[in-house]
Image (cartoon, rainbow, N blue to C red; front, side, top):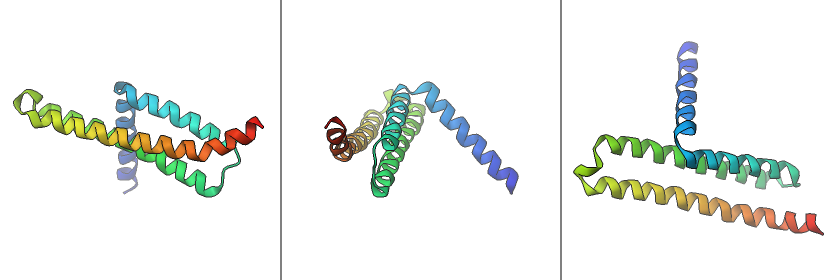
Length: 120
């Protein structure tokens, strides 16, 4: 049972390593997430704001992972065989974009008052 748990952790880490190595957007999102995490500790955020930011970061990174997994699976179907493969990939990319934009808007709403107070 413990061995199964550590095997699961190993496979998950291998998946993260793969996506980090092969997906530029994921690397960019991780860098932005790290910068946001630094700001989280720099400014006096409430516990609710911190929780919301952690949830948003997790959602964006998870959506990118799901997008990559679905793209790899769709590539097995050979995109040339059916136009829907391209449509499915575009829809998943749109889901990542929507999640990222929503996270960015919420992040701006949370951080702007802190930036204004810091400048004053």
